[in-house]
Image (cartoon, rainbow, N blue to C red; front, side, top):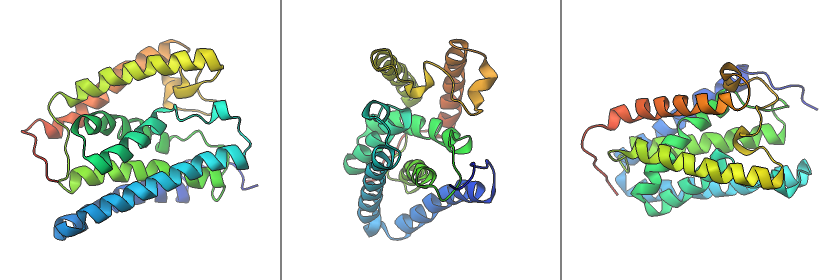
Length: 228
C-alpha cells in the first residue's frame, strides 16, 4: 500500500525531532503561564487516551488482529495507562515507575520500530503519535517543574519492571503470544539482535535496562522538589 517503512528516512527523523521539541514548547508555556498547567495536563491526558483507543481500533478493526494479540500488555501499553493516571493524580510512586519505562523502552521503540509499512499507513501514524505523546508527557512533567523522580526511583522502577515481566511471561505462556518479545525476538532487526538468541537476549536486556535507568537517574540525585 505505502511501501516498506524506511528507518531514519525524512519522515522518521522528523517525528524523532518533533517529539522532544513539542515537550520543550509545552514546558516553556507552562513555566511562563503557570495558570495553564492544569489545562496542558488535561489536554495531554485526553490526547493520550484518545490515541490509545485509536491504536486498538486500528489493530482490531483495520488489521483484523485477534483480541489476544491486541491486549495492552506491551511495556509501552502499560506505560501509557500509568502516564494517564499520573497526569490526573500526580502520583509520585507511579511517576517514579513510568518515568524510566517510558523514557528508555519507548524511545528505543521509536528509533528502531518493528513496523511493516511506511507513512501514511494508519498503523505507522498511530504508532508514532502514541509513543511520541508518551515521551512528550513524561518530559513535560519534568521540564515544566511539575514532577521529578524521587530518590531510589530507578531501583523501584527496575524491580517493578521485573515483576511486570514475570506477569507478561505467564500471559504469553497461556495465550501463545509474544508480548515484550519475551518468547522470541522481533522479525525485523532490533537492538536485541546484538544480544544473542533466546534467552540470552533477555538476560542481556536486564543489564542494559539497569544501566539506562541508572544514567537517566543521574540528573535527579539532588533533593526532590515537586510543583503542583
